[in-house]
Length: 139
Image (cartoon, rainbow, N blue to C red; front, side, top):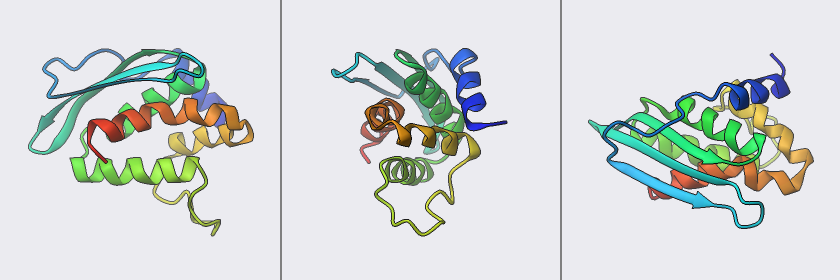
C-alpha cells in the first residue's frame, strides 16, 4: 500500500477513535494556526498504555496521524511509547542526521506521514497528535 493510501485509509477508517473507558491519562491540544484539535485518553495498566484513543477534528494529515499514533502506541510500555514519540517527532521535523537510517524504528504507517515533508505547512498537522502524546507522557 502506498503512503498516500495508508493515510487515506486511516483518515476514512480511523483506528481507536473515541475515549478510553477508564482514562488515567488525558491531554488536549489545539493548533491555533489551522484549527486542528486532538484529545488523547489512555489507561495505564502495569505501566502500559492500554486503550489509547483519540477524538478530534482537523485535516486528513492530523486525523490520520492521530489514528496511526494510537495504533502504534497501544499496548506499549510508557518508556517504549516515549522513545517512539521522540523518534517520530525528530524524524518528521528532520532533526536526525541524514544517514539513510533515520526512519529505522518507525512503522510503515509512521513513514507514510513523511509525505508532509514536501509541504512544510503541514508538518505541524502530522505532528500534533504526537506532541499531545508527548505532553500527556511528559516526554
